[in-house]
Each structure stands twice: as structure tokens, then as C-alpha cells.
Image (cartoon, rainbow, N blue to C red; front, side, top):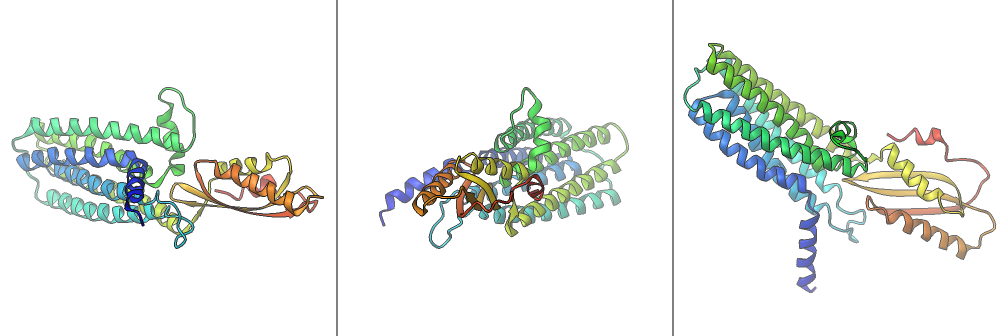
Length: 332
């Protein structure tokens, strides 16, 4: 096999990799380094927890970015449905990393509750590191929110994408979803850590450092469970959301020769969908004409950038309305 096309394909795959996860990987690595120095100089447990979280985020996003590249590979004879679920596997690896970091963070918080540490030097370094954290993670979070609305095909105006991202996060690609959840917790954790650093430096309430450290660890546990559940469902195979099913049905029924949809199954593979449908055609068609219509509808569906595989069956109109709003309600 000529190796040149393989190199070209690799470059194409790299370009298709999830940009939000790549940006988050680089940003969180810088944040972890800055906060790690601050934690070492001051002995702040909340700063240590926040640093651990940023390190976990960076490692995770490296895994996820690699997975998003592999998930873009085209189907082969050996893997006819494609590699969409590969990203779910990589996200599950990220969940393991988050879980380990969460355990270490909670353990450190418990230790600080039992043995509070008086804040030492490096106060302004800690403040600067956390403000840097807020700026970088905030920018990454806003980027992820915009990606969610883009992937969900939701039009928004102004800052409407912020509210819309919370509403439609379930319809985004697994890597974008992971970036959203992790950076949402990262921003929250940075705010909590900032409050802890300020309060413990200005008062004698040193136990707050341990409390905030445990809270950040628990937030990480929440991310691990949420992302783990989403990707477990993705690995099993989940039906498409209702709006996707409605869009596919409208594309099918828009053909003048299609009278009804006898059966429709849409399975999500990573960020893409596989469509399996039995459509009803008007009576009196020849086999050659029916085949032409089937391929016409199939081409229309496959032209959708979110659909990678279409299997259509055709039958003559049975005189019964099978595609109804009640059937549509069965979709998530």
C-alpha cells in the first residue's frame, strides 16, 4: 500500500480532532504548573487541590483529543460502522484519571481538617495563579459552550449561548461534553480556592482550607460519575435525541414518492448517527423506480454532516399511518 495517502489521511484526522479538548489540554497544563508552584510555596491545601484538578484536566484532554482523532477514521470492512465509539473508550479512561485525582484531593482535604496549616508565603503568587486559572478556564469554558450550540445546531444571539449550552449539552460530542463539565468544575473550584486563600490569609479560620479542598474533590467525583454515565450509555448504544429523529424523518418524508415511515431506528456513535429505516413508497412503482427512490433518499440523508451510515428498506404503502407523533415521543 502506498504510504503517502496514509500520511495525508493522518493530517486530515488531526484537523478533525476536537479543538476544545486540544485547547483545554494546553491551557490546563499551564494552569497546573503555575498553581503547583503556588501550592508548594504556601502549603495551601485548596491550591494543591485546584492544581491536581488542572493536572487531571490536562491529562484527560490529551486522552480525549487522541480519541477524537481516532473516532474520525472512516469505516472499514473490519469495522463497518466506523470508529465513533472509540471516543467513549478514551473518555472512560479520562474518568479513571479524574476519580484517582478526586480521591487524592479528598484525602488531602481530610488531612488538612485534622491538621490545619497556617498560610505561609506566596500569597500573591497564589492569587495571581488562581486569577490566571479563572481567565484561562473561563475562556475554555466559553469556547466549549459555543461548540455545544454549534454541534447541537442551535442558533443563539449575544450571550444566549451560555444558557443554551446548559440546555443542550446532552446533544454535543463526548469530547466537548467532557471539556464543558470539567471546566465548569475548574472555574467553580478556582473561585472556591480563591476564597479559601483570602480567608485563611486574613483570618484564623484555617480549617476552611480543608473544607474547600474536600468540596473540590467532591465536585471532581460528580464530574467522574456524570461523564462516566454518559460514555457508558454511548458504549452500549443510545438512541438519537427527539429533534434528530424529527429532522431525519422530515428529510425522508420530503421526498414526493415516500408516503410513510414504517420503522425508524437511529443510533448515536460518538458524535455521529447511524440511520436504519423502513420506508413506504407510493403504489404502482416498478422495482427499478423504487430502487432509484431509495438511493435518492439515502443520498439526501448521508449528505447530512452528522449522519455517517444509512440503511434503508422499502415496501409498498400499506395504507396505515405508521409514523405518528406518538412514535416520535419514543425518542429521548
